[in-house]
Image (cartoon, rainbow, N blue to C red; front, side, top):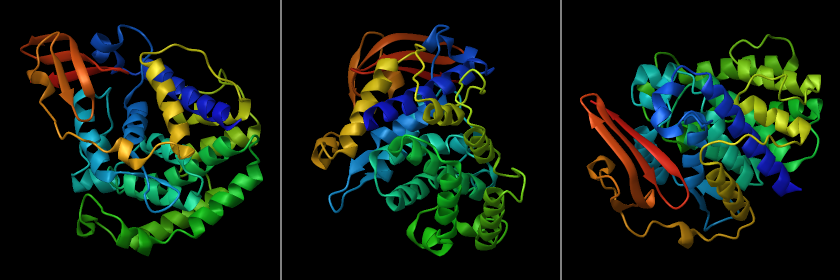
Length: 345
């Protein structure tokens, strides 16, 4: 069933992220939040803020990313993030925006895949959302390619390697760089790119097609290459695969199993899965998701046990707050989840 495949896909990828994050040296920096439990990193958090930014279209049968909502969510996320990559922190610096690979892009693509049936719409939404964080061409092309694998997992019972390869080829061949430039907003001006963007895009497209044709090594597309190797080998074991959001998503499609690991805010993730399935089935109207109050208070101004309302977090209460010369740490609870806000001085 679709519901089972989607639930497996999201939970397994999230657990892959949790297990990988626990091995990260940044994990102990957020002990005030996770208390030595498994918890998500910025990868899954990027998936979550994308889900929160989804809006059913009033014009056609699709669910789109409300970019202004996404930008607002991204700004707030920087206050409660669980680690981060350079793309997410320095997205408005041209050198970083164009050059840095964004390893969280596929996590943002996953909910877009789940709530839409038309892959052309999915590609358009992935492009416009990705470009709010990075203009890196490799990151963009690889995200679209892996999103196609997510699409197969969400919509089909078995993964056929040859069918996936041929379908990704067609997706990449029919991408129009002219349309991408004309229809999307880049964070940094194209004039700040230190080469010819269109020429580099076409070279990268050819390199990717060579990977798909098996005439090139993984080169710049290492994550996609690993995903395809997992599918080609028939590997359906989580134990034999390094923990990772994307790789565990692929194993989810191969095995049909759901990992049972507990992690912080697991109930919240389950609620988001149910929410995405309702969006996909058209059971939520745009009017229900419109923000009625534009209230964005400074969270760090609130005291312990104090309640407040925030347009992106809704009604919240401060569970705990500690402050010293190094900064402020706060645990915020709303109806669905716990957030660890951290501000360094």
